[in-house]
Image 1 (cartoon, rainbow over the protein chains, first blue to last red):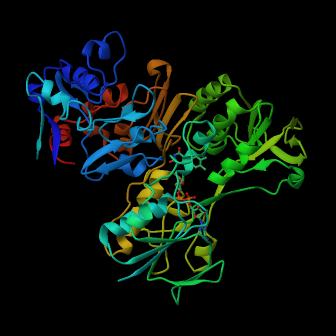
Image 2: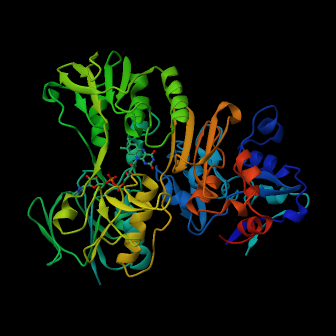
Image 3: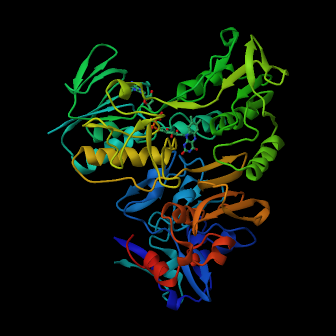
Amino acid sequence: MKRVYVNEKWCLGCRLCEYNCAFANSGLDSMVKALKDKPIFPRVHIEEAEGITYAVSCRHCKDPLCVKSCIAGAISIQDGVIKIDKEKCVGCLTCVLVCPYGAVAAGENGAAQKCELCLANSCGEPACVAGCPNNAIVYEER
Amino acid sequence: MSEYVIVGNGVAAAGCIEGIRSADTESSITVISGEDHPVYSRPLISYYLEGRTTIEKMNYRPADFYEKNKVKVIYSRAEHIDSKKQTITLTDKQKLKYDKLCLCTGSSPFVPPFEGLDAVEKKFTFMTMDDSLALEKALNPESRVLIVGAGLIGLKCAEGIAERVGTVTVCDLADRVLSSIMDNECAAVMQAHLEKHGISFMLGDTAVSFDKDKAHMKSGAEVGFDILVLAVGVRAEISLAKEAGCDTDRGIIIDETMLTTVSNIYAAGDCTQGLDSASGEKRVLAILPNAYMQGHCAGVNMAGGKEAVTNAVPMNSIGFFGLHSITAGIYPADSEIYEDHPAGGIKRLYIKNGRLAGYILIGEVDRAGIYTALVREKTPLEEVDTARLRLSPSLAVYKADIRRKKLGGVV
Ligand SMILES: Cc1cc2nc3c(=O)[nH]c(=O)nc-3n(C[C@H](O)[C@H](O)[C@H](O)COP(=O)(O)OP(=O)(O)OC[C@H]3O[C@@H](n4cnc5c(N)ncnc54)[C@H](O)[C@@H]3O)c2cc1C
């Protein structure tokens, strides 16, 4: 299965991935409307360690703790992709408690959200990868 | 072909079904369900009262779950197990044979024998969907509610009904709220927040006897109420197991494969006492993730596969009125404690023997799972960047090669 991987060496820390992610998942057709003058809730985030930056998003683990731990039965694996049913999620954040990658977080309305590879939004494939100016994030089979 | 029988139909049972089916798609599975509902998300009963979910959405699995997994559900209770003949007798005297049995009987509310309790008309426990629906019927905007027990269940109930009643008072013999998961400092933060949202507390004090609509407290005080909720504590359902000859203590004793001390009988979830790897002791860990993982593990092993649960630790994510708290591990008295106040919240890290033994976060909880992983995996802190660890949880706490492995391959 194709997943998102980072290439620390090439990451500039520009955070375009965060903006592209938030836009792709906003359901809006203009980046300005989606992002300007408001807090954004991207599903990928940039971390920094000793001057090195890298993007972190859901690993789509093979044996995911979030799926096993969700108290609402709202997280499932569909064809290898881990998905959160926003309607069922009550925002308890047990997934945040257990994700060892720090890749799940509360979204704008309190429900948990994470990378679902943009498969269901208008982008169709990971927007963070598509918009990365330096190929520091890739979407491939490993 | 084997005959699998599961007693109980909660999350541990769901995990067991999925565990069995991951290794054996053919043999028959029978579930005996004491409650009259398909498996639902028990922790959501307070969210239901709060209007944040619906009965429909509380279904833990899709409607075709049993059918898809070829599971027969019998809505009845198991009364007796004969572990020699490997049979199980139900309330209606129906007898089932099993090759492998899993006890997923959960826990029940513990109600102390209070004097005068019989005189109280509107009294409730808060464990099941039916409890929640019954309590809902009794609520009205003027109700004065007294909740006995300031633990997770009592306080979740308080949050669930706060907007639908007149007053909510919570009493507890402990001198702080959430005493099983919070230290004094953090409990005080949670309590203040709950008070801001109209919940009153009587701590270090508890009801000792009741009249029809009045509680007599240990301190001598009297508290009038219209509705009484008893959330003193829960007890593991161990009677069936005990009778079948399984070793029991506070829960059914299990090994790392979820096997009890009787052959072909497994147990999983709130009814068990398994290894808490944070304390090194066998304890009842009555939390949903543990129930699922133990159930899954039991199922795999029942079906001839190999799985073990070796790193279960106490952990909780619980919010009240928009304030989240996440906790994991244990808080040994002789730990080195690191405290900080990010974004107006509180963070306390308990460090002992060069490991993160436990932590409590209130408010700012982003990426807490990175701390949980350090607790679960008992990672030696010399292998991580402790200055960063204190600052905030991130993958930057790990050395570069470990981090690259985590982000660079299939995990
Ligand atoms: C209000 C509330 C809030 C909670 N919040 C959280 C939370 O936020 N996070 C968290 O991790 N956990 C939470 N929990 C705990 C969580 O719900 C439990 O850990 C979990 O449901 C345990 O699952 P289980 O399958 O082991 O047992 P249960 O869900 O208790 O299921 C056991 C079932 O077995 C049935 N049974 C028992 N004996 C028999 C018999 N002889 N024959 C047939 N059936 C039988 C019972 O009727 C019951 O339906 C909460 C619990 C409550 C009550």
